[in-house]
Amino acid sequence: MQSPVPERRPQSFDRVLSSMCTEPHPAARRAAERFLATNPGDPATYPTVAELERETIAGLADLTGLTDAVDGTDADFGSLGYVTSGGTESNIQAVRAARDRADAQSPVVVAPESAHFSFHKAASVLGVDLRTVPTDADGRADLDAVAAAVDDDTALLVGVAGTTEYGRVDPIPALSDIAVDAEIPLHVDAAWGGFYLPFSGHDWGFEVDGVSTVTVDPHKVGQAAVPAGGLLSRERSTLDSLAVETPYLETASQASLTGTRSGAGVASAAAVMDELWPDGYRAEYDCAMELATWLADRLRSRGLDVVDPELPLVAFDLPDSVFADLRGRDWRLSRTGADEARIVVMPHVTEASLSAFLADLDDCL
Ligand SMILES: *Cc1c(COP(=O)(O)O)cnc(C)c1O
Figure 1 (tube, rainbow, N blue to C red):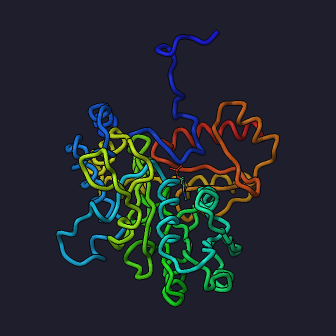
Figure 2 (cartoon, helix red, strand yellow):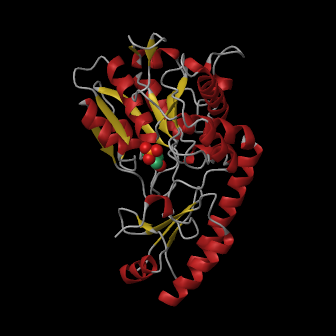
Figure 3 (spheres, rainbow, N blue to C red):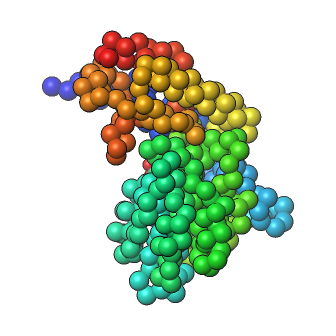
């Protein structure tokens, strides 16, 4: 028989190596508890959490380059984005906005095959076709293939900044050129990578002209509590196109896909970004990237084939039996579609935990 719920405890993060989520920052945890009984979906009734949402979006606007990209210093970021339930909702909404604004009879979304499975959900829910194109040998969108796939039916081009399997960053400026030429919007999915990318030297956000919308999740590398995702748009008309009238609320319209939303997620995102943006996140990036490089070297020195990490995510070949043995020792590891093991160097992953992992790996090898 199961023990009573109050006696049960969640997993420890000590052996979690494959999750894109992490332990919430202490500031996020406190804010989440404080704002548990609030609903940002009803901003007129819950004005304090609505204010925290505007602050979160202003922070995400800084992080994605939107602040610099839009005119005027006091841009109303409340109309340029909102806190979603996660990358999935953000991606669905970006596809929805593009579909509704496209001229094509049968709108098509063009995305590299490395795009997250949420785009398959979006295509299915929204009745659009998802046309996936191959990636190059390094796992980034193949530009010739993308250019060949874009046509009059294309409603949206997707680029991934930090792929789920390998942490690869697509050539966003080149994708932007293709999108601008074809007069279609470019959506950048930085759900996982977004909180690392401002420090990695990539061009990936609104500083690139053709980028129309960006997904970035505070509840992943941002260390907010789940659920806290983000959708940002260069133009106000994108969110306007998503808004529906809301007869029984005090406010007139709502752009989010969900109705009632988590005030805990919103408040935790505001709190942790207030605490860590930008210097704290820069330190996290430096530390995670150094650990990823160190780990890749250690794995190579054991004769394993390692995919060079571009962001803090290390994929490497590992025999099935060893993978199973390590899972048996409680290591939370996952596999890529091509069957490599992958380790996501999230803020909770430390040199100590990776050293313990390597010691178990040596045992199992
Ligand atoms: C995690 C992830 C998503 C989905 O985000 P959820 O918050 O799990 O809904 C989308 N895109 C990418 C690139 C991701 O890594």
